Length: 128
Image (cartoon, rainbow, N blue to C red; front, side, top):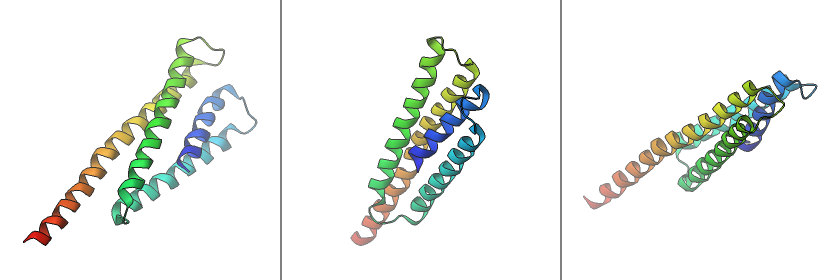
């Protein structure tokens, strides 16, 4: 859902001002809804810490980081190499990609620190 959400949101951002599709608002809304569902499920996994969730969280963070980097790169490349579409769209796409990258890095730092801290506490309880 994360990748589809990023894909539809990016297409929606680019096509809203350029009117490239007949329903750009629908693509943007669908992308945002998929992102909200994906972020909600990520929060649920973090709160309840399903066994083996550290692998799932690492995969989620990696996919979000790579997708954000790809979106930011495509926005920057289209800004640098003059395209026919308005540059404001690609500034928004670049900002969206950078937000995804920073969110994945902050989430990685926060969630894995909690998981490692909980594992250390659990292992120290058995030693006393």
